[in-house]
Length: 239
Image (cartoon, rainbow, N blue to C red; front, side):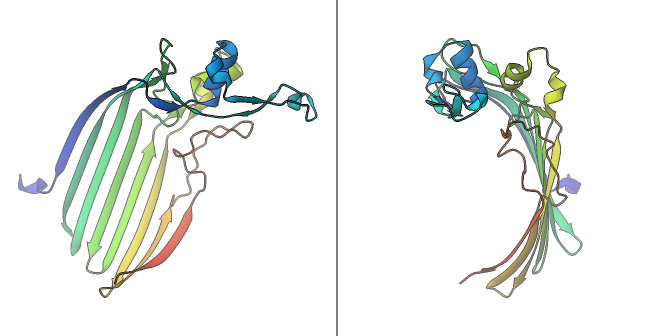
């Protein structure tokens, strides 16, 4: 119909399984596999102190470092669907376009080694069940304005991590990270054919993830914004 000319909608279902996938195992999983299950392959990632460095926490034989190494796992699996929509039209004397995408994760996990029980990662940090991304762009002559938003849904710390530290009876909701929306914006202006000035902001409203941290161990690097609002500007020159 004429009132939705330019509208594009897509929907995709994905169900992916990889045998012997190369994965990076988490420190909590390394400790569980090494100390609770006695698997030497994982103990190789644990570096112990050969001499005391003072205090019980730094005694001989205590853990100095855990290397989150790459291994050939027993496999990984991911299932979910993507829905996208985009639309463009003329408005306010210029061109206005919108786009939105939604990814819903149904199932996600890793099998640490052949024969092992799968670790369900659905809904954990980095694997939120719901993620949204949207953009709005307006262009009129030399002026361009763009706004984008990314929403990361409610997530939880890795269950092996919090259960190992606080027990299987610990309240899972205590290790929940609420969903967060990050907004970015940019304004640009074209001078002639060769120069473009731009000014923008990342995380415009200075949103924090509310992420739980303990013992200097941070989760969610690459998923959440730890820096906060920042501004940038520049000039592009074409020859």
